[in-house]
Image: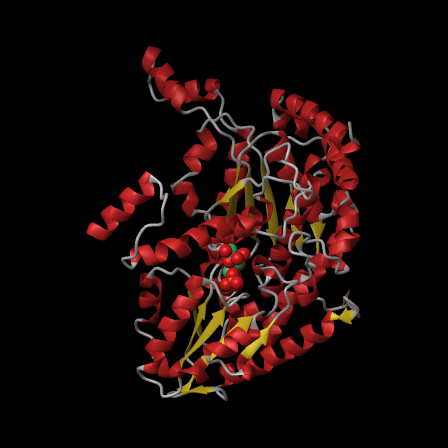
Length: 538
Ligand code: F6P
C-alpha cells in the first residue's frame, strides 16, 4: 500500500471515531477556539466547530505533505505545465503578482506582458470613468459585460461585492443565451452612452457570441459605428478583431489563465471601470498577499491548506456530499455561484492525473445563499434534515452603512447564532421541558417535543474579517482558489481542465439546426426525439 493509501485508511478510522463523539466534547480541553483557528492579515478563520481533533489535523496535514501539496504549489507558481491534459501552465497568480520580479514560461518573463496589459486597462478604464472616452451620445453611463462562466461570474460577483467603492458607470452582466437576459438588461439603457464588453477567453462560446451579435444590432439602431463602443477581453485576439473590435480595444491574455481564474486580468475590466485602477489594484494586492501566505505559512497556520483539508475531511472522509457557502454579507450574493464553478468545474472529476478512475468521490456539491435570507428558506434542512451539510459562514465586523449599524449587529448576531445552533443543537430532554412549560402532557408532549429536537454536532467554519473592501475580497477569492488547488492535489486531480463541459456543447451544436427545422440525426434516442417533437409542435 502506498504511503498516502495508509494515511487515507487511518483517516477513515479517525472519521469513524469522530462519528461516535459530539464535537462539543472537544471544547472541554484547552482553548480550542484559539488552537483551531488561524489568522492572516485581517482575516480570522475559525474551524473549532468541526469534529477535527489535534490527531486528525496532524494526519490531514501529513496527507497534504505526502500528496505533494508543497511540490505542486511550487510547480504552479513557477509556471510548470501542471494542466497536463491541455499542456498549459497555470499562472493566474501572475496576474496579481505585485512583488515578484519575474515569472518565466518557456524562457519568457510573463510579467512583462501582464504589466503592459494592466497599464492599458488602467488607461482605458480611467478614460471611460472620466468621460474622455465617449459614446456617440457622450460620456459612458452604462457598461454591459457579455460573457459566461468565468467570463461572467468573477466580475459579476466582484462588482456587486464592492458596490460601496464603485463610483464609475453602472455595470450590468449578460450571460445566458436566453434572449430574456439580454432583452431585460438592455431595456432602459441608452445605446449611445453604453459600452459593451465582450468577455470570452476563446471568443467562440456560443452564448457570448450570440449575445454580442444581438448587442451590436441593438447598438447599430442608434449609433453609426457601434464597433467603437465595443471592447473585447480574450485570448483569441484575432477573432475579436474579426468581430469588428479594433485592436486598441482588445485586451488579451494568455492560455495559462483558466476561465474560472481570470477575474484578475482583462476579464476584470468591468470591475476596474467600476472602482478605478487603484481599487482594482487593492483587489489584486489582496490576492497577492494570500498567494504569499499560501506559499510561506506553515501548514497548520495556512488558511488555504486548512480550508482544503477541512473540505477533504468533510467530503471524502466523513462522506458529507454537499457544502453550503453562507456569506452574511448581501453583497456577496453571487459568491456561492462563483465558488460553485471554481470548485465543481475544477474538482468535479472522475479520473486522476494519469487517467485511472478515482478511488473516492471528488468535488462536493457547493451551494448557498447569503444570510439571513437562507435562514428562512433551507436552514430547516441544515438543522434538522437527516443529511449533514457542512456550512462555511463568512461575516464582517462592520458594514458600509454607518446609519444602519443596528442592521449589521443583527446580521452578525444571526451568523453567530446559526453556527452555535448547528453545534450545540437542542436535546430531547430540553424539548420536553419546553413542551411541559407550554402545558402539554402525555403523547401530545412527546410528539411535539420530537419535532423540536436539533441533533446539533453539525460542522461549520467561520471566516471573519473587518470589512468587505476590495483588498479583503481579493484575499477571499484567492483563499478559495488555493483551497480548491489543495483539494485537487490531495485527490490527485488535474483541477485546471474541464472536459466535462464538452459533450453537451457538441450535442447542442447538432440539435441547434434541428430546432431551426432540420432533421434529427440518425439514432437519436426516443426521449430526445419526443421532446423535440413536442417543442416544435407547441
Ligand atoms: O463551458 C465552460 C467554460 O469553458 C468555462 O470554463 C469558461 O469559464 C466559460 O466556458 C466561458 O468560456 P469563454 O471565456 O471562452 O467564453
